[in-house]
Image (cartoon, rainbow, N blue to C red; front, side, top):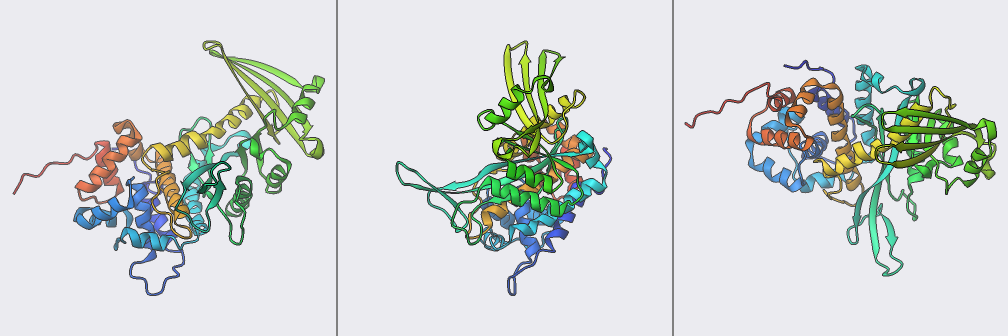
Length: 435
């Protein structure tokens, strides 16, 4: 049987999550169900990969086995109805969940598992990007952003979210940090923006992790002077996409740099890598004093006869020794799309499903609870041998999730170690003869 990491297994991580939920202030008067049970019930929906709150509510009320398993797996004594769960979670300030993400991160750090994510100069890569969360022509709240069709005048109400994940180009797992909601802020009439959300996210990240040395990875929207200055004020390095159409001055200066423009060519199997780089260029005409290092990259696939191109600005000095790592770090930005958003949308988490919109924070808070479920799954994928064996045995994550939910529905489960051991095949269930 695989060795279990006692501090980084599901039982320890979920118990830690429950302890952090206990710290969230309950503003209700004479509550009938503890706030922690309500929040853990919301988390359980996404941990078990339920397709809807209604299915979770019906099965819990009909099945003694499921109620017993909610107690043993999540510590839930009183299960709220789906309606009551929505009403209460709607009132929670989304920032109150930050302590849960911070504690999960600290557990990985204390367990020395964070070391494998170190990259250039022993710094960590953190990718940031926005994604759609909710969209409707009818359902809306005071925090919804609004866009209006020029042709029909029809309004669309929507929420977005800025995700942050710590990653490594050679690691399949990512470590999610607390996401930042992109929605109308209190007292504001204008729509929020990804740029404003990024500013808030960076400031909150630095408050939560004041000493963590990191390199921020972002798309071309972020390669502007105000944002880059913000990163430097918070002692953060960056590798950020710079597109020719947005940085005509920068590309012109790079191509006119003469001997300062270095060229390196590297063969790697069927791939031919071409690097062109210049250090210490002005970002643009208006910000000539803000100096950046600039990298252009071409990859030619000799087998497919295909060329792809990328370009970045960075504060890291580019050298012949580190240019390949900078390129791989810049391209790893896509892990937030491929290994995060696509996983949440297509592998059982139902990210784009509307579990409930609410009047204040419900839509955002459900998305955050989903990110917490994803974070604990990713930590187990990274650190827990029992989880890894169960995942290998079921071959795909979707099949693993189906097995987990089936076991949860059918058998009394002592703890997460027992459940994962059943899925992994280390514990054999013996069918009982009929009475």
